[in-house]
Length: 417
Image (cartoon, rainbow, N blue to C red):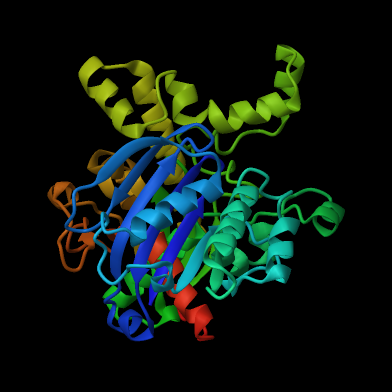
């Protein structure tokens, strides 16, 4: 079964084609047939296609909207140019899996998409005004281009966190606002946290309820998740992805009164402050240079830039605070798992985060931390042999999880993550 996985942002479109079915899932033998991204949709877009064993295709082309982008991708996928094994026509795309950011309190598991589900995703637009509209554009375009006969499935970023107890998701504001507007912590990156929890369980041959880990998804967007007995019981992102850890351009945790203070002192609107907190803060805001951790590490090492170092220090400090808080909430953990672009690739950041956490039983091995991940299993153990708490690097694969959930929904098989 060939699953077309779509992740539509406001001006971007990421895709993968994954060959998978129930027996392949059971054997962990799914195959990625192609992947790519279109950036700057609505103008002269940057397009990249990749298929295993073939040279990557990079080009620039005008892409009017998401429908035009998906049409372009599908034409490449079925073309002789791509050379993708087993795909020669639209009929060889058997299902579509969509990443949808927000499912609210009703859409708490992956579901087949019909008109009712689309209406429910629309109802969540107020909760994710930057994300859900783009996700809906992808859903509507795929339905139009592939027809109603191709099943489509929505996989929600918020769904994994639906198991959080009230003490974790409620804010300390009048309860009427939760009842009236559903203001609460929803959490995001759930697909990633769920995937690494699953991968850890399989690696350790544990039952689902035997997984007690702290998952750290560290990238341009970053979040921490406390996974106890296989379920999310707390996470750092909240009502929106702005809360929690310091990120590339997002501020993370701040005193809410700062918003009113800045509107008064700077003479700007609440909307302008919100844009600043989302797009001009975080690593970029502190350093004044960039929100890219790789560039900040280079600035720190080569130029001894003080503010680059400061931004990195604040980033690592925030992660340590959440790790400590979740240890206390969970009463301990089997492992701390690093994932995401920074978490998987920056040994320096992992070391700086772990420094000072020895009191919790986290004993990093510097040599293992710098070593490349083994090919099989593709999981790095970066702690000392006698470390009471395991420290691991597990590459995330949200697209694979979306493809697998799509297969399960098509065959009406209960999810077992």
